[in-house]
Amino acid sequence: MKSKFLKTTQIAILSVYLIFLAGSFVRMTGSGMGCPDWPKCFGYYTPPTSEQQITWKPNTEFKKGFIIIKNETLYVAEKDLKTAANFNQKNWKKYVKHDYNTFNVFHTWTEYINRLVSVLAGFVFLFLIYGAFKLRKTDKRIPLLAFGAFFLMLLEAWLGKTVVDTNLKPEIITIHMVVGLIIIALLLWLKFIISDKKTNFKYNTVFNKLLIISVIFSLVQIAMGTQVRQFIDEQVKLYGFENKNHSLMNANLNFYFHRSFTIAIVLVNLAMFYLNQIKNLGYKLLNWILFLIFLEAITGILMYYAAIPIGTQAIHLMSGAILFGLQFYLWLQSRYAK
Image 1: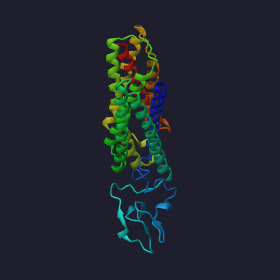
Image 2 (image 1 turned 30 degrees about the horizontal axis):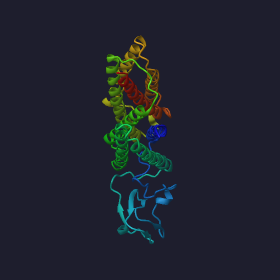
Image 3 (image 1 turned 180 degrees about the vertical axis):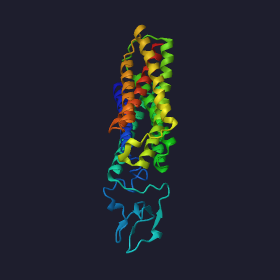
Image 4 (image 1 turned 120 degrees about the horizontal axis):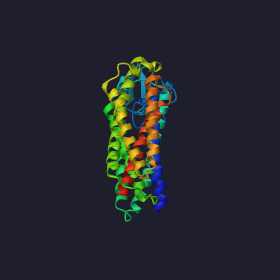
């Protein structure tokens, strides 16, 4: 039972990272508002494949909740109906949650796949809490961590709806990202508890303090990164997606803080690496951590100086999320050593 639950936990961790990957692809392609409503998409469970499906037409059946575009305005069907020769305003109400009224089949299906990945992850979490309940007598922390992660997944679903309803409000996106990282932390903690492969490490007080600082720094850096990303999205709206080279023109304070803060992160992690070597502490994860920091820096430089090459945004975001996970797991190893 324990080995099966470990595999379920690992799949749950992978599923959350897949959500991060799908979300980063959504941001990279500007598909965040590909579906104007939630959980449906233009009122459909399976999104439309052409604008013709959501355009008002005479003598056409529409079900309650279907969204159409007419005169550059979104309307929602108030009941099942069949249209007459002329548009009847009484059968429709304006969609007023936001004024986004564009249909792009690529953006719509990109956002839909992102949601589909989240739904599939939800089923994995159901198996997770079932397994955790059966292991409740083994360790009381197991059900607490599993149910905590499941509760936060439900919160993430609500935040996803709020992101759409608020037309990608920056503060909500940041909270959405941070909650996702907390879920990763809980799952990694769960994995660490049930894993039998706990290598013997040496504890060092200074190393442990630097490690806590590095985890906090990464969390702050990722949160700031979502704010920078929102600024880029606004610039793209202003200059057009084809003019991404203008994305960081007149960059705000968040960008300069995000860029300069990388220096502090590098220094802290290099100090940890140095202590690990001279004290022979045995923390092999540090090699991967330094690699991910290097990858973060390279993709950040490319985005700034090379007009955001395709794929760099997704790599940058995923590197940050994985980096946080490895640093947190390293802290668990250090804590275990003590």
